[in-house]
Picture 1: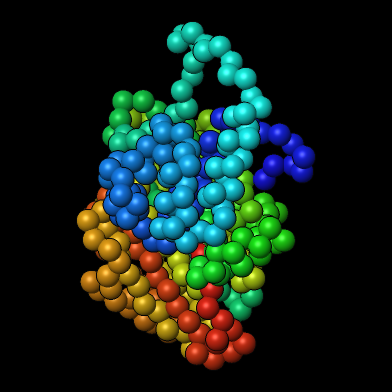
Picture 2: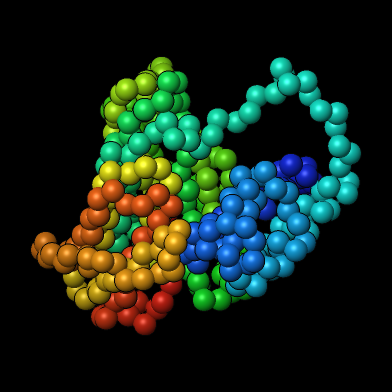
Length: 325
């Protein structure tokens, strides 16, 4: 989040715009292709916008406003970009030898996810999310960082109320209490985007004691976890397949006395949301009721969304929403 009164550059405003589009697209459970087609653009256009290859435009912002029902969020980011562009003189281009392009997300196709295991547990007031991924480096260069996303939306059906809620009650790093480990070592992390309801974070394969990059041909488990209160996080959890993945597993655990029920949908590059082909499997463990859903070789860019409601307890009639990746 920018400090009050701080002026941002056009480059930063463009990054903020791209992150806002990506957040709302994920909140709505739409693939990049599906959003582009809904807006009447070429299927690759949204990908270019989110990667920064296409700069924000008035037409795209207007159509995204209509297609994503994002209230004024995306339009406001476009206005911020126009204002920043107007007051910023374009600097001379640096010679090619001086440019250092940012390492692509997880080094692009060099990484394969052998196993993606996500667990969400609710204790009646907050959610603790734990993500474990076994990564294999199939490229030719060491991998030194890995990008994760944390996105929440308490009122997915009402973007104006959601935006107002997070302006007043932003998601903070202190409450997230983000931790990450690899090979028994703590991983440092750096914030890439810090918004009221959306975070992007680089997990770094190093700490104050040394470096432990993922070298070509190696596989390794990483684990990261964070906490979100139920005043900011809600009743849906989405997994997006951004890298080739061999197995995807999701476990949801709730207090049994809340009598939770769970269902899910799948969205792909070629089809809108449809029910999961296999339903989550329920099992009871003492005071916990757990739901497990597993799939193998999920399609790249597919999105799997699990939702739930509580039939008993104080939250029985509250419908909320959120996501993580």
